[in-house]
Image (tube, rainbow, N blue to C red; front, top):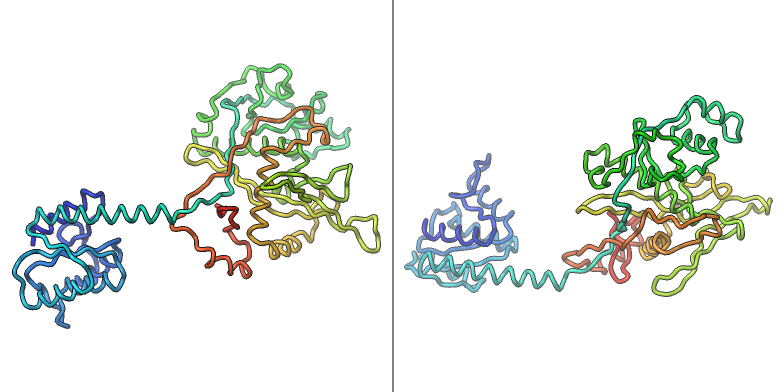
Length: 442
């Protein structure tokens, strides 16, 4: 049936689908003809059967290859569309026709043109139904990706510092620098030695300094450590899309801006563990609580000290709410990935050597809704929280601004009855509880 098969090919391709037909789209493969045909049926999304007049090539068991393909599609539960040509049929083909008719309603067609038209009608109806089912089964999920905004332009210039002299002078201070000190610490020392604030929202690479702060502004402390003749202003998008090296420099700059922003609200970067953790406060050194609003007004404990039984004035450990961060750029947008964590300290700042065991214990106890609440709380802090007076910040740091958590659509919707019972046995689960949707860690 070359005309009919060509009509089927045309119908399927007109619907932007990919037909798998031996005479048109099969490739040479190292397997038998029967296996090749059956494998194609199994890997297809739906199956079209055209019943002609001849029974066709018979297999040793007496069925035709077409019947074998049909049986495979039925067994695999493939959506199946049957078109019966109005022609005289061989006896075995009549038996096959009745077998198919008992399982599926088929459309009778009179010629190739009619067949092409009916295939298009049937598949269009199928796709419409599929789209409707998708629309009613799709659910909205929250990711842990928070939209971020930053200034349109950044500035860069060559560093102009005498490293050896700065290190030498630091020996006379409370924080002497080692000969191999990190360049960032040398820059901080240079600023302090010039009587300036040691701001940290900059990045550096291969002798260049990068910042969102305007280097042309004469009150900018960073001007004291750069070659003023090399200052350039550049579109941020042009910069980070240049290559991967510049992209990584830009991510480092975003990180440093986040460090500065969070420090103003009592959240400090812990370099050893790569965590942001909530610091204790002078007013209530044993416990720090923050009021916030989700669905209702609430209070969350972000730091709590535990003291030794035999030495009530000596801290055993401090338990801090914390999180990891990672910056992502996709779909031409920037996002801050937030990963809730815990940090245990000796004294409210230094890492407790038993921290890993304590964190594992806490994570084992946590459930999905608790982790989601951690995430929502951290987002609230980033977007709305201000405690400038307490931490003596002289101005509100607004270089980084935050939008909403990125939402995703899930199809099909996730059946809670399947995954929720497993939570008792799960550890480090990626899917978090719904309120009303499920946040998904990426």
